[in-house]
Length: 420
Ligand code: S3P
Image (tube, rainbow, N blue to C red; front, side):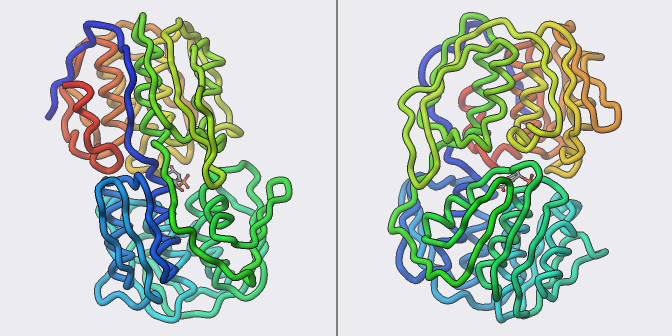
């Protein structure tokens, strides 16, 4: 349990947040496919990424940490002697399912109790269409067993806007016969596509369709730079946006437009956020973000923006609790299959701080802004983003005691240093 105190002064100054989790996973997996050494600068050191490192080492890669960098050198992938443990990481489990479906050896992927409840059929079904030989508990859950198979390219329209699904198919497509085309009606984060391009893959986009031709010869860059994680910065962006008189800069944050829906929504709510020092490395834009406190008003969200802020819904709900008026976030079905049922978690836990402010109807969340708040006993439900959003909420309200706070180690191990 951790006790969070209410803020007694505005947030002022400059901070850094940890490296991007999505890009770190991808940098490790891609680099491990090549036998030339790749230095992944500023690679996240947190539990989810350690799960990916453990799996790739079990598959034969040589991976060592050197301060903030990771040195990755692949040997031809080989069968793991033990099941591959994805821990709590959906990205590890799903991306590796795609990669391993196309390998000439058998693999088993397992995970913790939370990950073992998350749906995998969305990845398994299209991989089977490519010729994969995969079985899973109840056809949908870990453990997943993968047998060797030769895959062929497919044309596939994503039924859910999921970057993990898209990436799993792209990893499989790299080893398939013929081209694969993936249509995504609502675009999700494109880190895999950008990294494939950085490894010289023949990947093209036409509108919302991506085509990968696996016949091009790939080569690894010797360095990959990982920016700070926008999804970790999000907690401080909102904190500065809701504590009066705050003026906070967060340095060198990834601002890939497929990730920054939160900025668009907060600005539409009245927030004062500026980007400076904008630059791009391997297609990934990064910038310093400065947030100055300004009064907020309510927001409306619909399906088209959800993938661009999928991990920021809990913290955006906190911002809405400080805004004038009632916010309505629609089309949140995907929130129910994250590290927790985040829609239920928001209603159950956030209402402890602002009783009656949060209400779900189907997949829509209603947030009544500026309701009275109080000190509360809360629970993270083992979900890192719920723990961090509760911390921000409590800091801007009257404090809280939060149970099971250690789950922040998934993405932001030193998160509480900023609050104690
Ligand atoms: C991720 C994609 C998203 C996101 C997750 C990381 C990724 O999941 O919620 O935290 O790295 O590809 P979905 O693909 O399930 O939406």
